[in-house]
Image 1 (cartoon, rainbow, N blue to C red):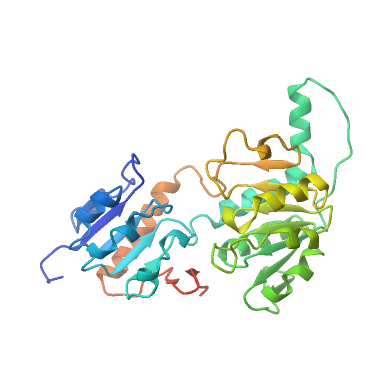
Image 2 (cartoon, rainbow, N blue to C red):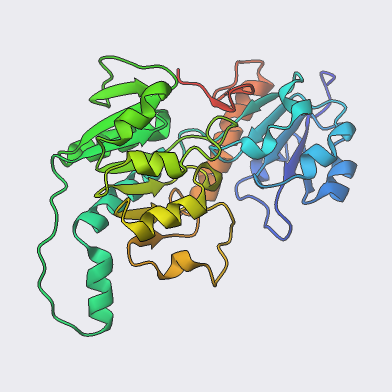
Length: 327
């Protein structure tokens, strides 16, 4: 880029998706292009310096990668970057950043809400309300219960803080064990996962999707859990083998599941999970709050200021690990 030329930014959105809000201020400082599929991306990538990717399920980028002749930085407007981790990108010099931090607190609120819904049997109360039935029941206490957060990164930390605030005992699982962690009773290594599953009342998946985590929660994992335990997945759908989960729920091997992500999305209308009374489901929305799209743009603009000034970017993704490391 010469001293007097504007950098070129390509924004990759899903087909039919509107332009991200808040980009107007960028147009005075950069040439902004838009693409929504492989064909348009092949036209916009030549000369592009920076990419902002809002369609994190896309395969278009890998397909059009040969057209990227000047690309230096890709920003993903999501915490997970698994869809971007194709070999040519991971092995090349283009840096990747993500939206780490934007969704942490709202996802943690979702997890706490789901735990309390299970403990106080709100799904049962809603079903009784719809039938106009008055039925008194005793429900569980959340206080004192153990929560195992699989993936003790920035999202996991917020989950640990919130569940601790209501008197629960958060434990974490990460690549390496950590002592004296401020947000967890203890952080255990991945090697201790199956042992720790046997102690938890709630197991929360907050890990990124990587080759190591894909299919991690299978028959073996569910057999290791208490039969009174509930699984909550706000990570990525493919971390859980759906068939094994359904078998564990039907047999009583585990007591319930709160699911925001699935192996197949959208979940088909005739899928058996819809009708299971010990399942709470939402449509991949655990972190989405009113105004989240503008917040994502503002985060990108802040990082663009750093890039334009030659400063180090924040939220740099370790492309070999597949996620942004902790500072």
